[in-house]
Length: 277
Image (cartoon, rainbow, N blue to C red; front, side, top):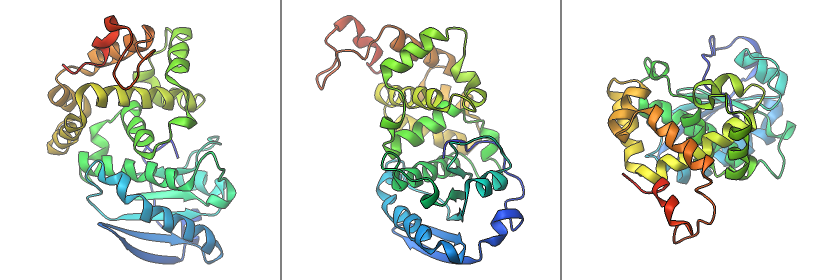
């Protein structure tokens, strides 16, 4: 579910994916999918198919998918780890790339706290980001950091309750002052996934609230043109990533989120952290 950046080689018929012999083409709203599963996994496949159909509304927030996506449904966590060539990630539920996603069968993990629909939308948001920021040949070259891609996915999928609050994230940063969660989030997520994804969510929300959805869309468009993430960020947002990071960390450190209601902050001296520049 939450580890979708490392290059996955050999995503073909080898290993667990070779057993996925049932192929179901799907045209759901503006999006096209091919769902690959085993015959014994019909119930799980139906749950994934239903979730794919419900994902359209969430994906439309960012313009929708540009390319068809192949969805692979494996029957166990061991099969998922074998397919993505990663071991020891007990929290992993799925893995997304440019135009394919591997899901672990929902019947082996699903809980009321982590709906299948949210997981599917989360992973498809990754595909959307990669497709709108690059091509099949260039998307990996964009070097999109964990905080942006996972923050975008968690926000779009409405998964905030699965992760630490703003207060908890502020406390974590305070207790880990020597850690650069923006730069080292990829490494830290192996053992501290909840903390890293919570920070990613809050950083992405801070970005969208301050600069607006249109600039995030512009950021993706500039990347698709030719630029990498850092270059595109500076052009679209108007400040370097490092400056944004400092502003966000100050937002947490000063607890600028406290007392905020529909009308804004109750502490006027902190309003600057939410104002657009």
